[in-house]
Image 1 (spheres, one colour):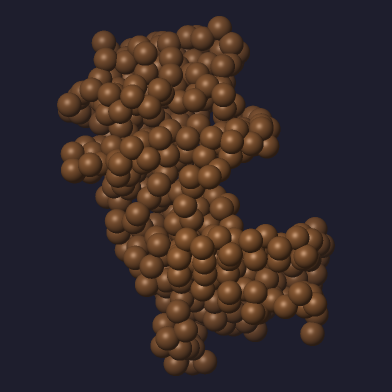
Image 2 (tube, rainbow, N blue to C red):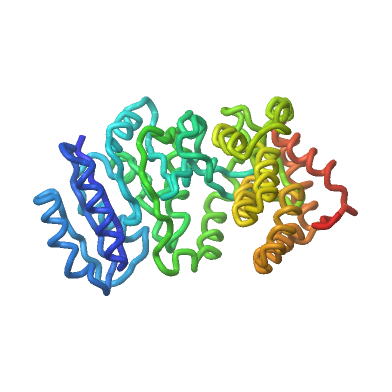
Length: 408
């Protein structure tokens, strides 16, 4: 099966160059066609792209040049029209490749009913950037297990996914054509989700090939999020009544639970029994013990607090602050916010402390409560018991008159 690798690019030549060099280094012997869509670049891309592509890939390389920046959807669609492969692999130009990245993707795409696959995307520091898109109980979007250690086993389990990122997405050409390609109404956002929901709604399965590792240097294009409001509105108009919250289903695969924080932010956490098991020897743990245990189980809030406290005792305030910032990405709860706010002030990082205070304050509490009550009623009507439990727990734990404070 010939695969056409389609890379949209707009300026940032050194980023594109690094992508192509790593692709050439780690794709020897693979049946690939390389198509770079120059989306109206005005930098060195115009002169350097052709010579480097031909040097690295020879006749397997093509440059598709557009007169102006037409955005991700139109650029990728132009690359797809120029492609000859049986399968299309859309990949951002801020991706770099690793040895053996392609065979797991090919294997996953050959499974019954699978219509699109993606690799495991890691940040340059080795933590997880993407192993699937999730829809929370409040219908917000997130990347499943973002921030997990890149070698964590949960990243390689099969989860029930409705969507994958378009930063690295492989699918048969015929499926892409049947879906109508990337919807041209979006401008650098939500095109990939729209395409994936089209594929999924037709009965197809989406998979992450966890043994395929790529590094994602994430959203370097200037103005990447400028049109998020308009893109979200279009996405909601097309899919708002058809989206099904799935984060709790994905988390259940790994024995985790989903909860809503006091401000309504969704997070994944351990069930109480697993927390108790981890807490049995926490009081005697060293900082090294905590760090090791958190690599094995990053969703242990007590471990982050213990590690931070030990670092503070050693006068390593900067490291302790970093630990709590990482913990706050997993747990949007007062138990993390309070020490983070205190330590940020002590370290002279007032801007960070103010940001934590704003996060703890949240949006209009009455509006949030009314929204969750509405979702609770809808989940009861649809007999979605796990979602009903999530909403009821929040309503019980957050009475209307309660407020959040970062002191005391």
